[in-house]
Length: 97
Ligand SMILES: [Zn+2]
Image (cartoon, rainbow, N blue to C red; front, side, top):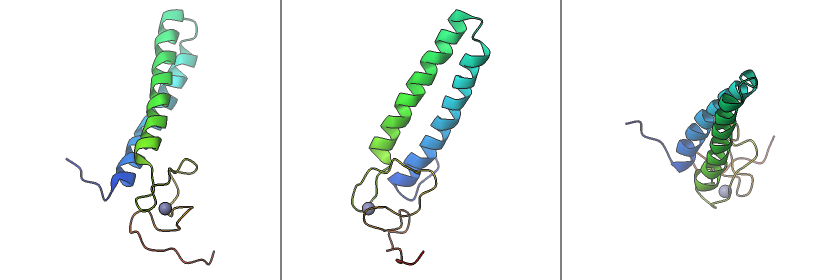
């Protein structure tokens, strides 16, 4: 089993997979739009994956220090926008830049 530095890293990894799956199923529902049954199935899976993504963000994508939920730029962000601590190391980020 793969181990993670913290919950945030775990959640972010999970979210990446979820986003990829959402995009795939969304594309599939467009490709199969001629077939109502298949399109319905793919659209339903897309919605479930989207909901799962929101759940993952709310549950895991929080700052480990101040517990702020990080929605925007969660896949790219390295420091918490509120307490300015690095999400992995917990070190304070310098003000410059
Ligand atoms: Zn924070």
